[in-house]
Amino acid sequence: MKFHILSLLVTFTAVAHAEQYVIATDFHPSQPATFRVALNGQTLLLHRAADGNVDITPWVKAGQNTLTVNVDPGKNENRFSKSTLTLGAGQNGQWRTLFKKDSDVYTKAGTSTFTFIGKPSGAGKLGKVSLFGKFHPSQPAQFDVALNGESVSTLSSDGNFDLTPFLKPGKNVVVVKYTASQTKNQFSQSTLTIGQQVGSKWVSLLKWGVGHWDTKAGSVTFPIYR
Image 1 (cartoon, rainbow, N blue to C red):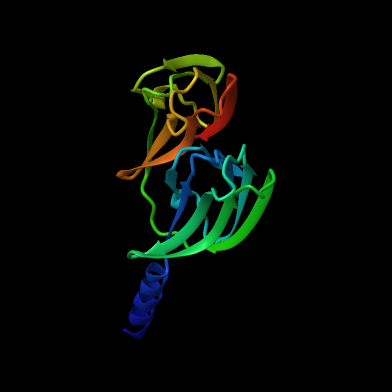
Image 2: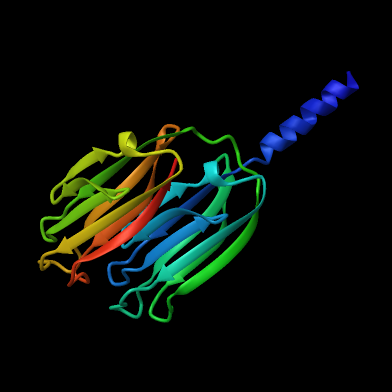
């Protein structure tokens, strides 16, 4: 009987201390920064000038984890503006900040590394992967999307596309080419999002905002692992 009670106590303690891990990004329109994040060497998210959040619990391992954050601050247009990436951990509605990275007028492009001890809770099953286009009428733009070298979608107005059937096991490479017409409002932007279903939630792996700062066409590459 004592053995069973002790076993239950150990199990309860382990569950009680299990946590969720969430990365959130908050961007100011006058600080169009780019955050690229990897966990234990695997790229998890790429957010640029478009708020998003990612529950990274499925990728956190028990024990030591290494978070790598590469920041490109872009052009700051207001010395009081900043964009921020935050890694939080918690359970039962109680959250604490593990890591926070600001991008402001003083920030230089570079990489920061943070190590933490993970106690991940049971995470939802990884599901379908889709891309979404959200366009502002004052910011015309076009996104051309290729997956593993093959063109899969072109978006210039609101829409979505299921990438799941085109993904192969292992590493997949997404290339997004974007063009932007002259904006009619410096606070407007159009955004391409690649989201993945985790349990009943969607997480934003790639969020790429196009705004008045985009005076030339460009492209971005992002890996998706299955």
